[in-house]
Image 1 (cartoon, rainbow, N blue to C red):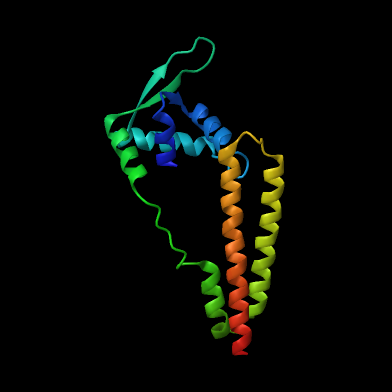
Image 2: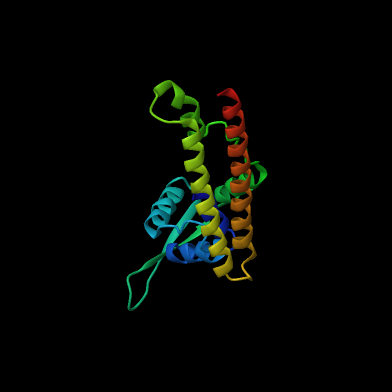
Amino acid sequence: MRLPLLALLARGPAHGYELKQDLEQLLGAAYPQPNVGQIYVTLGRLEKTGLIEGEAIEQSSRPNKKVYHLTEAGHEALRAWFEETADEPRVRDEFFMKLALAPQTGLADQISLINRQRRQYLNTMRQLSKLAAAEDRDNRISHLLIEGAMLHLQADLDWLERCQEELEELQ
């Protein structure tokens, strides 16, 4: 959450609730909705580390609000983030650990695990399809997020099929 908040602040000062709304509008319903409390805690941490500065703004009929802006250190952290590549190979996959360890425990059948996981992925794909149909057509980012998730799920389904074929050959 740290770096996405910095990225939103790069365009100009904002308060926490405004940042929450911006994330929701940008990413749509497919992305887990950020908790406003989590946003304010993260903003506090960013301020303590010197990546942002907050300024209390008085409001006549409401409590004061704190508006945040990026510091130079925040700009540098953001530039560094955009330069990094996202390297997250799925070698440490929890499902694969279950699949690998099931025969040793005698508590689960590998093919049953695969079938259960396949059902979960298919259900998730159906939910994403419904979200895509309901999402505003103009929100290209949200549609790309949904499409990426569905492509990952399809790859996972293909991999499950491969696992099942291999395991059935061993039996």
